[in-house]
Image (cartoon, rainbow, N blue to C red; front, side, top):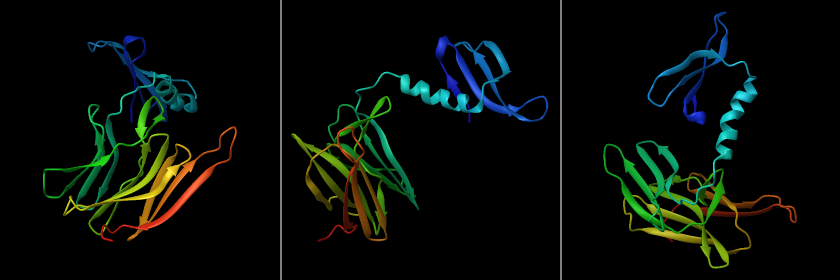
Amino acid sequence: MASISTEGGVFTLGYKALAPDGQPGHFQSCFTPSGQVVFERRQDMRPSDEIYMEGIYRRRKQPPSEARAGIYRTRVFPDLLVFIDKLEDEDSIFLNWRRAPSCEYTRIAIGVPHFHPSGPTLFPGVSDILFHGGVLALAWIRPTGLAHELVFSKVQIDAAAERRDEVVVSKLPYVTMVAAANIGPEAIVSAHRGIREDSDARLIVHFTRMDVAG
């Protein structure tokens, strides 16, 4: 896969190709914004680790964005495409899904989540999307004044109005990361705060089920 830099007001493509000796190597081609060639297929003699880390360093140097908008946690299940999204002028995140062969998505509001820094952008405190027995589910962090709640939301996709929110922890003592997974109908929800200078890591574990009823 090619990497593209826009530093210096030009497009610089980095890519792998065969060198004149027939061995794989790293190369660069450079173009002006109008498409004129600055140079083509110039071998990049830097070590592979430095080339690999260049894109990571570049993303880290980007100024942080306050935008709370995007597409998050895309998942593909058999005959089912699911993702979470949010526009900047919306308060809530939305769960979207489409089943084959339909071309239309169903969209349902989940709630207003906590957003945490993730590189140069903000990312909602949500887990991966789970699916079992016609039920989509996810865990997420909901701000409630000075505290936060850990919530496990489940939606029956054939009856979108049938939704259940289970408050796993009503007062989280910290803002944290969240994860969820399932084995059949049995699900686990976890919240984790890593080691801080003044405290050890903390972990919350909760077991629940994927069914909406009850």
